[in-house]
Amino acid sequence: MKNILIVGGGFGGLVTAENLADSLGKDAHITVVAPNETFTFYPSLVELAFGACEPEDISFDLRSKLKEMDVRFVRGKVTSINTRRRSAEVAGADFRGEIAYDYLVAAPGRRLATEKITGFFKYAHHLLGTSAALKFGEAVDNFKQGTIVVGLCPGGRLPVPVCETAFALSRKFDSKIREGKIVVKVIFPESLQEAFGGADLYKELEAAFRSHNIQVLYGVPINEITEHEILSGKKHRIHYDLQMLVPPFGGQRLIDQSGITDEDDFIRVDANMRVQGLENTYAVGDIVAFTGPKFAHMAVRQATVAAENIVSEINGNEPAAEYYHEINTIIDSGDADTIHLRYGIWDDTNFSLRRGTLWSWAKSVHAKFWKAKHN
Ligand SMILES: Cc1cc2nc3c(=O)[nH]c(=O)nc-3n(C[C@H](O)[C@H](O)[C@H](O)COP(=O)(O)OP(=O)(O)OC[C@H]3O[C@@H](n4cnc5c(N)ncnc54)[C@H](O)[C@@H]3O)c2cc1C
Image (cartoon, rainbow, N blue to C red; front, side):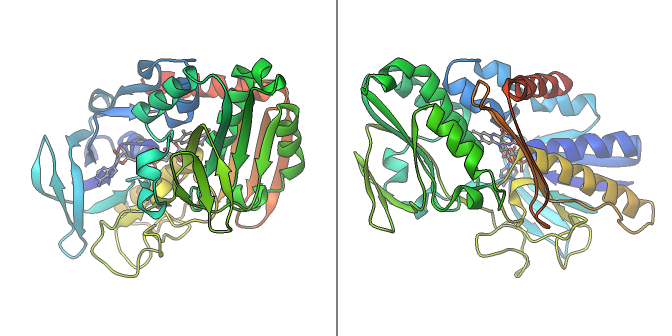
């Protein structure tokens, strides 16, 4: 009987557990370790901030979901992984000590590297969690007049909620924007193309921003936030009365081997999702060192590949399933400017871009379907 340890209970961890439980049933002991008992559907955090849903609509109880699948849940944080002994050190409410494994899947998501931006912790709003989204939503509700800036910090890797927040602000404050009482600005550290992993959606997205009276600034690598200004490494000083910024992302150094992570601590994996240079070790989701933005749909497909390969290995076969790195996302403007983008990041192929209200509807149906399936 093999012990499989999954670090993290987000999109990557949950979908890996589901696929392994489906394929292996009682032939394996599967354990998920995560610090929270609640799964949060992050793509709905913009809706939460703007009052379109409640926290309970976008979350569910992870422990009971895993129990239904016969997967053990341990509430805690993995603090280190000893690859020679194949064991993980866990500190948490349920358990404190070592958990041994035969196979490991690292899916701890991203770390918010707020320390890279002076003043971020003190002054910035962000959307990277339920309470942060609610806090930003409250600030939006109380906002009467002035400049609102939303943007990506260098290394933020999450362009969709930045765009969707700008669109939501433009819908909410439509008449005040027309009267000139409120200005909405969106800023990117480089070009739009770079923010979206090389996809050429500049014309369409910029037209959508224009038709919503949103001002766009490119090439603003934010490096400092003060009480009323956003400063960049290129000497910009941008005044704000309210802002929402995605901070730089980083990985976590959990695994004891050197050379397996890049300079931002993201884990290097091959196309089979195996951690490079380590046996029986996989990584999926935001923690992996793939280029371009990070998306839940990538975490889900990576988890499916990793689970299939672990099952192959357990059955004595070589891992054969391969992951293809593509963006397949909807940037929801809430109207006919909504964009569906598909783009193969690794080989610059499979580009398709469609627009229309249908995609706004499709995003909300997909979110409802995902939540219903997993709740
Ligand atoms: C506001 C917002 C909007 C988004 N919109 C979209 C969208 O429209 N479309 C899209 O595809 N994606 C979107 N995303 C991105 C998507 O949510 C992420 O790509 C996805 O959550 C990554 O999944 P993951 O499993 O790697 O990480 P997460 O979902 O972050 O899960 C990580 C898990 O690991 C746990 N963990 C962390 N450290 C440890 C540790 N040391 N030990 C044990 N457990 C640990 C965490 O508690 C959590 O359970 C959005 C994200 C945000 C924040």
